[in-house]
Length: 227
Image (cartoon, one colour):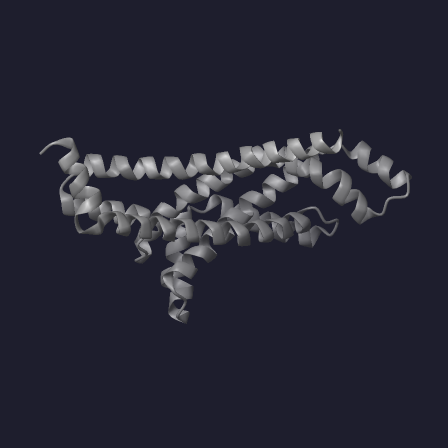
């Protein structure tokens, strides 16, 4: 069998490409929803982590430590078989909840580190000039935090997409499961899995490309504003 015949068998016959795209969509859907919910929850946990109240800080610290230290597959299995599935929650939503919790712990610690690294002198100067606490945070601290956190946040997104490859354990037909099924059906595991890896790689670089494009647009707007 030639290389192109193998490609035809893997991607074309029986509209396999549609099945692969369907699995990719499930992966993207879970990743996007988990990232949105995890970012919001992570910001709230970060807020708790930086409070003066020791009890609130302690709760946030335990939350971060437990979720960062627990393998995401174990958490997924626990929530699916032990908690949420029994309540009738669809497997995809169980996966979204699982990855939201996991990624929120990483984002909370990322934001806390970025806050610690931000220039406090600029914020103090703004307060001396009469800026409110919220205005100072929005105009001075937040832009610094976003700039500092952005590189690691990008990597967190890519890691999240990769972590979702375990959702097949709870009957979800994502990209990895579709690739595995296709490899078994076509008896071409090496080529099929290589195609799956290339798809994941393409999605990862798409994420980095989106951030790079956003940076370029932002720089152009700042440059245009100064002209």
